[in-house]
Each structure stands twice: as C-alpha cells, then as structure tokens.
Length: 396
Image (cartoon, rainbow, N blue to C red; front, side, top):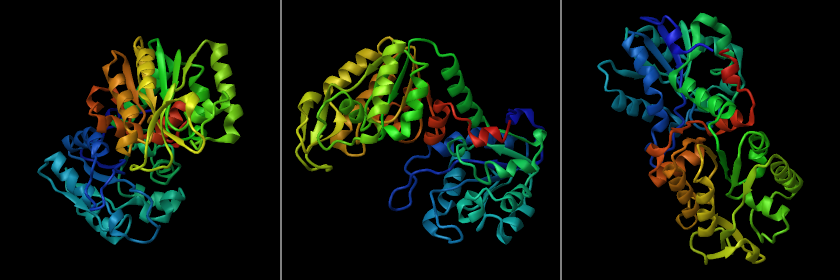
C-alpha cells in the first residue's frame, strides 16, 4: 500500500477523505477535536506542496437528501482554521457534489482548501454508489484516505471512489499508515508479555476479537458489562447485570481455550452494584459471590482494580479496547479511570483502541501517557479480529 510520500502531488488537486466525526455538546460545540488534529500532518504536507486540497468527511447519520444544520461540517471548518493557522482560507461548500461545491472547487488557487458538506447528506455515500463516487473523484487528480475510523465501512468515499484512480494516484495518509503499522506490528510480533484488556458492554461485539486475541496474548483481562456473561458461565449469580445468555457456551469455550493455551484469564473479583441503572440510587461494593438477585453490576470494584494492576505489572505490550463500567456516570467511572491510570503507569507499549476507550483515557488525563491512541473504535476492533478492512483493501 502506497503512502502519501510515494505520490508526486506538487501543485496538484488532492482529495483527502478525513474522519471529522467528532463529539459535540448540546450547543453544537466540539468537545474533543483529537480526530481533527490527527489529520493535520497529512493536510499540512499537501499545503507545503502547493496542492489544491478538497477535504471530505461524514458526520453522524443524517437522513440522506435532507439538510439539517446540526449535521453540518461548518464547525469543523471553523476549528480547522484555528488549528492550521494558514494564510489561505478554508472554504466551506454548501453541498457535497452540487453547484456550490463545483463552483468553489473550480475557483481554487494553489494552497487553497475546500471542505465539502457532510458526505452522508448524499444517499450514494452509504450505498457505495459508483455515480456518486465518480462525481467525488472528478474534484481531484489524487486520492488520499486518512479516515482510519471509517475504513471498516464499504462507502463511496472509502471504496468505490478508488476505482477512478490508478495505483500512482491513490495512497494512505499519515494517520492511516500509522494506525495500520501500530496494530499490525503489535498483533504480528508483540514484545512479550503481551496483555489484552477487553471491556465494554457486550460479548457479541467483541467475540471475534477475543477469539483472535486468545491465540496471540499471554494474559487477557475481561471487564465491563461483558464480564458478567463469563461470570454467569462460571455459575455465579449475577442478578440483573447485563448478560447474553445465548453466548454462555462461547464464553465457556474462550475460557477453556485460554486454559489449553496457558493464557492467564482474569475476571473481576468484586463489583459496584446498584438496584437500578441510575446515578442517584444506592450502590454497594461486593465480591462477585454476593451480587443480590435484582441488582446489577455497573463497574468493577477496588479489589478488581488492584488485581488487574498486579496482572499488568510485567507487561511489555498492552492493547486495551473497552471501558470497565458505565464510565459516563461519575459513580461508575472509577474502575475505568483506575484501569487507564494503571496502563499509563506501566513501561509497556500501550495501544488504546479508539471510541469509548480513547474517551476514558482523555477524561482520566492519561491520553498523552499512552504510546498510541487509535482514532477508530470499530475499525481498530476489526483489525484486532483479523478482518481485512474495505478502506485498506481499496488502496492495496
């Protein structure tokens, strides 16, 4: 797969597919611009080579064909101007492939940037439509994919568009290359002991990742809501905790496989339980043997945090995907924050797999201590699962 440096882009028109799908608050203010900052290296490289730059991204899931201001990329253009501090302006198109976008693209001078509106305003984006992809491709002579966070989706700006560029005119951006290198190196040839920390709410979303990781790691730590499926599979009473009864056999299978391979598997030994899913209700810290019927586990307890810290002590490589509890609520965030602190304090190569996990490290103040924080939750999970991503395949 070629990277941006392999292409002769000086003074040319370059289409960069970015991932600007950033969180905003209820007033439309960007609360975390990490994904925008991650794209800057690729954008600046093109600016330095006097390219005419067309930027494109999706944002959330608007109804195709319907313009809604809350899904507009206008706040992204504003933040880009602040972060880039360039002489040339960043123009914002009022549509994706319509008259306004075409007129503004035609009027571009060297070093100019044009941000197209939310790709998902067009139905052709999610349908991987060839006609729409050809319209996007007509804006530029080169195609760069720097949207690792969207690479697991077979969409027009990720997959179909690449059919209109030959091997010398398409490549991965710097962020994309970095993400793929980190994950593939770690998964193929990790420095050992190699430990995987897997959390989040459901086993179903991580089953393939667990099955793949069990063959590669020395230890695996399971927390979050998914731990209760494993605890129930061991015969514990888990009350009203989140359990996927149809996956109990799979959970048993993973534990059996770990034993056969000599992989040490850690589960919580105590939990924070509450009678209802609420911030204001009574909570108890209990060993897993004592979860009352009708109560639910919403975070790992302090003894589990200590156990997991001990397990991490000798790690040389750690990959973490998924929080340890309902970290969005303060009362149930301590386990996830403790895990973040414990991972940050090790001397290991630490890789955080995007989405919620990246959010935890940010809130815990540990993001700068991690070796690498991925920008793609779903995409990083697919790489861990060993599944090839459409966005990567399209560039190979």
